[in-house]
Length: 622
Image (cartoon, rainbow, N blue to C red; front, side):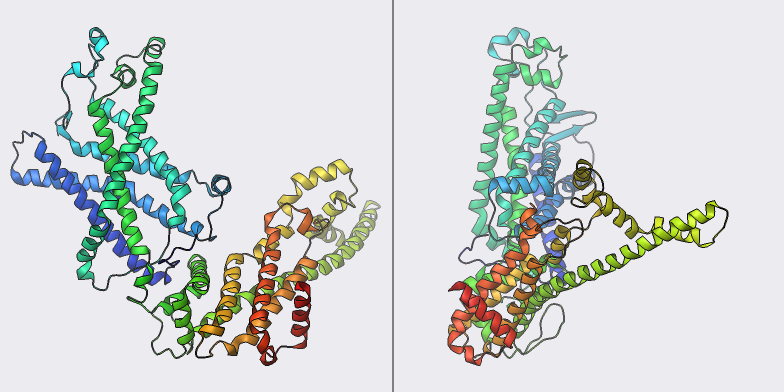
């Protein structure tokens, strides 16, 4: 995501506030959809000539049932999956702050993320809404279905030079539905891929709650007055443009297969026969495809417009209904909701880089009088203290995870070595006991020893290492390579998996380091209260501890017995670059902090170990 003036990266404030806004959003979108469907039903009924002998009450009930049925098809089947898809893809859009290249994006989507599901959902939505459109403009008369503005003259469908062969070319309702089904499927594919590739990075997630629920209709009227020209123009233009492309493709098919395909395949006046034999340009069908496209895209655009209104925050709306620092800090503490937590750290990074007013407000908020509005937690007297503490917790947490993994793997190696020695003794003892059994001297410990050797997984791990180790195995080289390529990855817990587990919060940690560094550097000129200077030593110590821990992790990685060579250079997996990413980010941050606070380093109290590492780091840059 690139920085856009006037906007900031949004985030959701806990499950309570989010669920409340979601309920309002679903209620509003459902009301809008039902109102639009009812208007369409009423408008179409005015143009349809109905011979209805029932009473007015029966007609009203029937209209209500038809409207409700159409609403279920449009909203429940057609639009709710689109809404869910739009929300889910937010998680992917905030993973990085710049969109990758198109080739890389497609590789990620279709290789790992199953991106074909999004166009499939759009296809289902388009088919459901499009079929509802034809239900609305059609009229049931017993078993015979007619359609609004349906041409009854069969000569209309005949090419001029084929009048003598057009005895039964008058299309039926089913043929209309088949052609529209093809149209809707292609429309869903195009719009699904367009949203997946180009529009998913426009998802900026936040909540905007109206001050007064009774004034909600005024808010929508103001929104309509601002957006009506863009909304109407985009809907009509998109539908007409796609309809023209669709009919150009139909013209190509008509010219290509008009003469020879019906002669090769015997078609008994089916819809395919009509599709091939009908006139190349069908004005009635063209109009219906255009209006069907407008009908479908109108609903998609409506829910997207309301989505952007409810879940997108403009800079001018900050602090309208909730303390912005409370929202930010609550998002930073959302440990049970990693998705919201990542977005909160991304917003903190954006504030530290681009938002002068929010930074000054954070520095100045050192005597908080009102409690947080979201989840309850310890409320300090300074917003900076809460933010810096959370960032340092992530930095130190990564350092502790790396050290814990090193200690765990070292302890496991010692245990494996002791077990290996024990297994050797047990193996020799078992052989002797089996020899004793053969000569008739029964020993009750033989069965226990044999079960211990054959059922212990560590024993078989050692035997596999002894047989198939890439370097010291007893089997032939070809067999060892074949085993390591095809079977060993299924059983080993390799360095790649352990590193990925240690650095599972890589993006959050990088955001925390960069945001904390920038906030401290900018505080030299923007912190009028001196609230940041009390934490300079702790920030230096946290970053230096993390740097030394990760350097130790990269220098002596927790290797398994199957890991051969230097895994950080020999393996092709991208995850092994994570330690070096954090190391480089911490080094850059320490350089920036040292350059900014160099005149004040005499007041920074560090241990001798930290001073030595910082001096060594400064000498590397010189």
